[in-house]
Image (cartoon, rainbow, N blue to C red):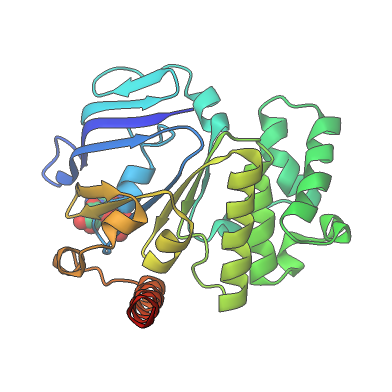
Length: 272
Ligand code: ADP
């Protein structure tokens, strides 16, 4: 399912004295099955963009296309329920949204609310608990008896239980230790590769963007100022700095390796 933003502008509290434009004429094209990262400094508009991906926010100007649905200013958006099922959002600290008595019920909640049978919802929960790296007996526990990292995995399983085609991740590793961060990011990458899940990662971590994404877009002061492959995006450190972003270590490291290899090759060529 492709997602397209065409000339999207968005104002909070539109038409009131508190009106504040957070997005200006944003164009974004996210073809099905890509891994797209959206990076930018705090306040650049990342979260506002993200909420357009499943119709939580409607553009003040411009159009949003989610699969064959069009959402535009001034028009009532139809059948957003199916869009919400196909585009799953893992919000920041998703564990704050856990509320059921048991982990099993929590994971089953979304699908059952969408009319999926109890049997099927339970089957999904049992499959997913392994996928997110937790043992099956956790299903009978209260989510509130789990560690923070485990709770996050349960919340992610709850989003995946809807079997979305697109998953949107809003700083999915915030607050986790480095090992937990890598495990979660690797899990999403495996899902993307093995199940062809379109993945949109909203992050301030340029390392993660460099490591996992096929394409990266940079938000700056409410505008999408640059889009390209990680190589294109990280080619020019001055441009990045002008958007208050710093070249990630991993890229610097790769450059160093490339340089070393080139030097070695030239040495070999010289001696031959
Ligand atoms: P980011 O996710 O990159 O930190 P946001 O999308 O949260 O950026 O914010 C973009 C701009 O919109 C900021 O200037 C922010 O202050 C403003 N903003 C965000 N949410 C609201 C809101 N509910 N009401 C008014 N302004 C908001």
